[in-house]
Length: 378
View 1 (cartoon, rainbow, N blue to C red):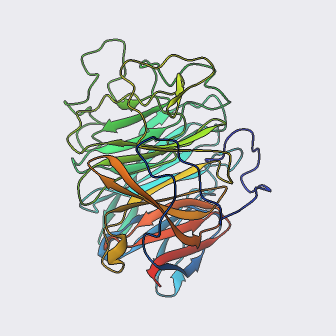
View 2 (view 1 turned 180 degrees about the vertical axis):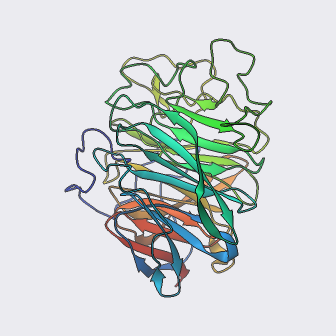
């Protein structure tokens, strides 16, 4: 899971003080939050430690439970499991079923989980008529993990049709193996692969390090600590990453849809805009578009989505995010990759572990304690 190492339990005794605003530190951002839209959270289901979700075929929403089950959200709540790998994963540390996604045609379904040995595993299933075909399961990618935290796990297809995979730096604390800046490992990176182009996958020809003999061809971006949740703006194609910090700063990173990849987000030389433990800022460091310190209740950013739904016009085009330790749902107003406003939606999502964007652009909030809620107009 995403909680930093010093918080040993996923469900801990973290104080939720939703009425306090998170402190921002970027000079070009307003210091005071403003109201973005009037919203409420409508509870639509209860799950067992919901961890992640994705839009499914036919306007459905598919949700994963951390212990290994995938269910489809319907009018009556969550249905019976369509996938159950609970015997293949463990919830020790920050492990479990951490990512799910469909390809653009809803022809294949992908899961990202840590197996019983702790290895990050991305598997693929064929989908026919909206149903999983269990006999088609195959493993696309694996990555051994030295520790039981910072396993990353989020996966999503980009506007380019390729599969992006977020991997943390391998865990422990302080990036002891220097993985964040090491292009010779997949750890601490955002990967881009083509699972349909080869077995087990192909490397997209435009990946930024394919001509570097000292770098992994799969790498799209690097310098990440624990990119727990990332997303693509359905309106612009821009990439946004919520990268969980070490002990002082939480950050949201950005890249334009026109990016050719290769962004260095700084870890572990940098934590947000700040040198980490005497580190030196890399010459190619791409600073976060937003950061906040831990002087308030927040301690573990949960990246979300740019809202592109129709139900809440005042929210459209704003990036919705939260913090696992705080629960307050906030937004960033963005213009060409610059933050022009920070807002507090005035609702508390609890232990917000993930957001889900439905096919119609509406957003759901997952509370690790069980609640599945939709963001609705007040």
